[in-house]
Image 1: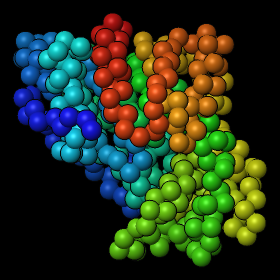
Image 2: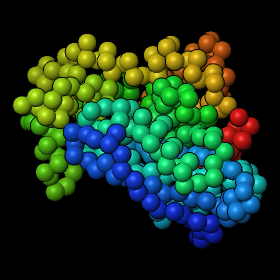
Image 3: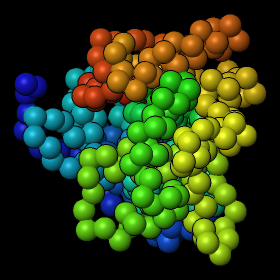
Image 4: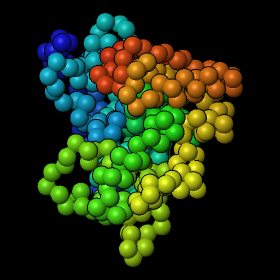
Length: 342
């Protein structure tokens, strides 16, 4: 087992909240969100001397949130502990490390704009950045890093808002929707069958005192539908969650599925690859035995980036989708360097 990190935090963790109408949503999730910001001792000293620091925003994976990463966990290292260790060892320069609460009632976030969950992409690029610039001495360079849904959010937002982000790192980010989701519709619809619709299932979960393990996957599929194919609200469905498959036959609605695929980085890169060329760092990695088959989509994505002459750094490591926080030891130093040289 990995060694437990006993090292106390020597720097500072700020906790503050702010509200934004951009996060208005049909789930009735709060528009006010908590943001944790970590500064290492070296970062505090640098800012006291008037030095401007770059910003790295951490995007959490599904069922996670930024503040969670600052919490104690057995045989693990918190994100602030990791930041301080890397800076103290001179592996990276200090940064303003931001861990926002981005959780939703659907269990997670894909960091795109949706009337169901809120305008998270715009909130990150405009509202959160504005707050950070008003509260801290930044050098104006902002990066994104995340794993899984968070890695997806980093990659997609670099394409959608190239003016906002200067460097990104995507760890096992969602890529290759055909392999990731296409083979799970039978499992999902069987689990949701008694509810007859995604909307009804979401309402049932909201009223349930507990969740079963299968609920997490089913709820994730509803969250994806809310992100990639939000429907118009009406009298019978005022949320707008509709899965792209028939509940009786499990046949895929190809028009609806095409709307999902439009958000697959494998397809987005065709339209937005020029945005990625402006990054000072585009780091991508994935385990070679990812249980969600993301390594196949990531290989195709990296191949296409090379064909499109998009500068990037791709690494494939021995591992799965789980237990890969150690990969932050690779990405955080690269980001801290890239965000100083831009």
